[in-house]
Structures are given as C-alpha cells and as structure tokens.
Image 1 (cartoon, one colour):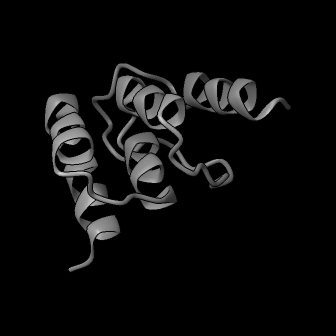
Image 2: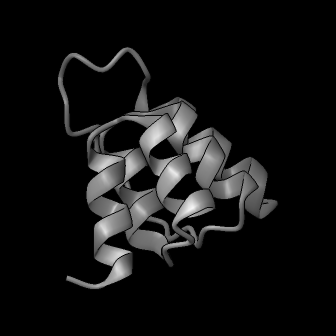
Length: 87
C-alpha cells in the first residue's frame, strides 16, 4: 500500500487526530483520495483540514455522503469546496 492510499484509509476512520499525526509526524504523502474520502464520509472537519493543508481536491459530482447518519449535508461540503476553489 502506498502513502496516498494509507492517508485515504485514515480519512475513512473519521479521526482527525489520526490523520494529523500521519501527515504531520510521519509526513505521509496524500492526494485527492484523502479529501474525497473525507467528503464521501460527510466529515467537514476532515475536509477542511485537507483543503487548508494543501491536499488536492477533486470534484466528485453530486454524490451524497456515504453514511446515512451523517449530520453534515452534502450541500455544505459542496459549498466549502466551491469556496476554496473560488467558484
């Protein structure tokens, strides 16, 4: 498993502290898989961390969050994405 996949799997745990440790202490590489995983799981906090720390972001279309119990709406995630990319 490469570093990018490892970071994406960490994002799937919805544990911000774990992702911060992997990135800041272990200096693992990441890419849009990590931000997509955060968005797909409806985790605004993780997505903000990704965007604010230079992680690539790729538009996924209008996919709903993966977890039905998520309290974060996809619209909120989409608005955040649009704000950061300047659209």
